[in-house]
Length: 364
Ligand SMILES: *[C@@H]1O[C@H](CO)[C@@H](O)[C@H](O)[C@H]1NC(C)=O
Ligand SMILES: *[C@@H]1O[C@H](CO)[C@@H](O)[C@H](O)[C@H]1NC(C)=O
Ligand SMILES: *[C@@H]1O[C@H](CO)[C@@H](O)[C@H](O)[C@H]1NC(C)=O
Ligand SMILES: *[C@@H]1O[C@H](CO)[C@@H](O)[C@H](O)[C@H]1NC(C)=O
Ligand SMILES: *[C@@H]1O[C@H](CO)[C@@H](O)[C@H](O)[C@H]1NC(C)=O
Ligand SMILES: *[C@@H]1O[C@H](CO)[C@@H](O)[C@H](O)[C@H]1NC(C)=O
Image: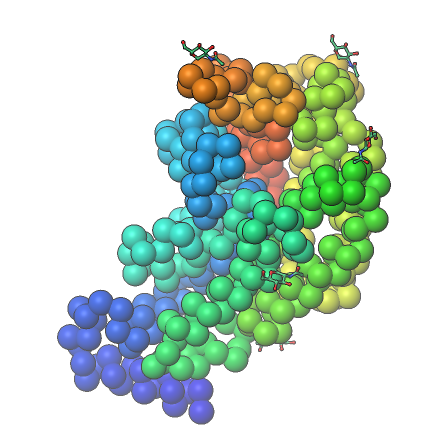
């Protein structure tokens, strides 16, 4: 049945070669999907600001810093929706797979058909597994959106890749917004820690769904970085050390996630746990509290872009447009860009540690 439908689509293409020039005919889309799969699987990204490449709308400087200077000053040399001075995790994972960064969902209308066939990024800054109080699409809503889009794309060329494990590769990046929200709402890290089983259980459901319902052939999922070393935690300590309770929380999340993955996929056939925690910790915790040079980073706990006040933010201006933040000279020497997000240099250093693992997992 599925084979017959696929053949029908091919036949249509042969009979109607002019269809290729008509924008967005279903048979045409079908062809580009099939063509691309032969070369390389598409990459579909779900997650938060560690993975977002421009999906969070511009809601003004105060709410969406990533669209304002100095974000993006290293790459693409202007603010363009990435929460960094430059590239983020998605860019480096795509590059490890030997492919261009998938187009952001928000930019899909401007993307070429060729780019669209190579995947899409649905990750959005502020998102969590559960509600994070900021109206951004949670992971399950991002997957819903992906499924709705796939359904539409395949209309008229049904079941080309419908019910098999051939939808491509998913990257799932969950970096702690659920916990930040819980800590904020319920006043403290211990409230966030109590929330871990709920968050990881829901994440497990969504991971299972990506394999069993969506049919991803591979799913790469990140663990949590040592959250207590982010400047939002280290600033109150004058950047002299990390918050041990928040780091214990991250470790607990990671243990729970590993347990869920082991139950879901004991043979490690579909899922790869992308360990960002180890390289973050190696760089952030290896200086024993004194700020000596750690793998080329002269500053690990203090961010490159630092607001004047703890309640402020990178990029903040006063009513006269005067900067309310200090900016370092060379973001390549800093691990953190702002109070929660790594620099491009940090992501490059982290990604260098898992590049080979990702590549070999994909090729099996
Ligand atoms: C995710 O968001 C959708 C849409 O807002 C909502 O219906 C759903 O309950 C949310 N899921 C979780 C686990 O909070
Ligand atoms: C939150 O905790 C801090 C101290 O840990 C306390 O000073 C503050 O009043 C608490 N706020 C609320 C809303 O409970
Ligand atoms: C994908 O493969 C897994 C395990 O091999 C299976 O449980 C699942 O049902 C498959 N999903 C689809 C959509 O075929
Ligand atoms: C941080 O530095 C300020 C000003 O020098 C000082 O008042 C404060 O006690 C320091 N805090 C810690 C946790 O070291
Ligand atoms: C699967 O991966 C985990 C770590 O990611 C490892 O501990 C485990 O031994 C692996 N299982 C198999 C069957 O290779
Ligand atoms: C902004 O400029 C106006 C006019 O020069 C001045 O009165 C005001 O104090 C300035 N505001 C700040 C926050 O510096």
